[in-house]
Every structure is written in structure tokens, then in C-alpha cells.
Image 1: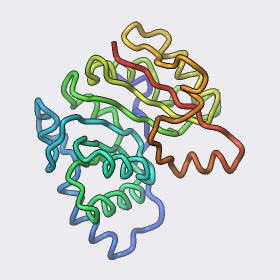
Image 2 (image 1 turned 180 degrees about the vertical axis):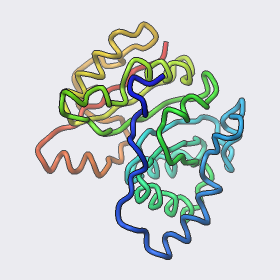
Image 3 (image 1 turned 135 degrees about the vertical axis):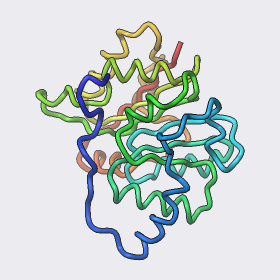
Length: 228
């Protein structure tokens, strides 16, 4: 079970209504791209994708889809599962994936916890969580997605040697994440020097949330933990 009752998100989040043309494109493509949890997960996740892939990564909370799209275009032999419950962000990415004809992307439009529980054991080559909602007030910290129960989920679905990558501009969330992973004998922090957590993994496309943080005078931190 999650440390809080509804995982990482609290209900479907909706912004401005979608324009009619975008809505039509979205509705036509989402059925093909959405991961269907009502069906048993394939024992080999590579079977989820239309394109032949040799590895599979998960991105939790892909926001505007900048990083997801960049990686899917750059690594056409890697499958990417993106999770995003915010309808407008999801719709934008669905349309972008459809227009680009990417066969190595699948999407999920709700809380990441049920998806993680659906995935087979040791099925992922990596997980990204980039600039997640920091829940900055102390009384809300229990809502942060990084928790011991969710790290249990990461440990179950990641292959030995696979990694979880986390980026944030909020110091308390970075410290929170380091403290939670420090308790885990099944993960090791890969940083060997300060640049390993001060600079993003390369090549790096950035995200709109990172750009916002930089504009507001905050810097990002980039943590990588490898599954032992």
C-alpha cells in the first residue's frame, strides 16, 4: 500500500477545455497508446510497443512531455511508458506522439501506483521522475511520491543494475529523497563527485518545470540510484 491513500495524485486534474480539433485527435489516438490495466501485463514489456525495442523505461509525471518526446525520438530502440494524470498535458503528448508516428511510446493517464503494481517483477530498465510536485509544506510531505512503500515498488519492477533517476529544484525534497534511499540496502546512490548531482544526465533536453525553476533563481539537483 502507498503511504498515503491515493498515491501520488489526488483526482484527475483538468485545465482549459481542449480545442475541438485537438480533442478529436486525442480521442482517436489515446485508445491505441494507453496502457490497459484491465488486461494482464505481458511477461515481456517489450510486447507493449508497436516498434521493436530492446529496453523499457518509465517516466512518472511527464508534464509537458518535453523529456519523454526527446528521449523517444533519440532512442528509437527503447520503449517508454509515460504517466501523467493532467488531461491537458496528456492530450498534448498524445497528439505529439501520434503526429511523430512514434511506435516506442505508451501512456497512462492516472496515478502511477496502480501501474507500478501491474508491471511484472524486474521488467524495467529505468525510471525517471523529473521535477515532481514537491508538496513544500511540511504537513503535506506525506503526499510526496517518494516513500518507502513506493521505493518498494521501484525495487520490485526494476531489473538488477537498473536505475531510478530523480530531479528537483526543491532542497527539502532532494534531502527527503536522499534520506529515504539511504535506508535501502537494495539501492545505491551513484554519485562520486558533486557534479554528478549538480549536473543533469547527458544528453539532456530539460523540462518546462526546470526552465521555470531557473527563471525563479533555483537550481536543479539530479539524483541516480542503482538497483542492486
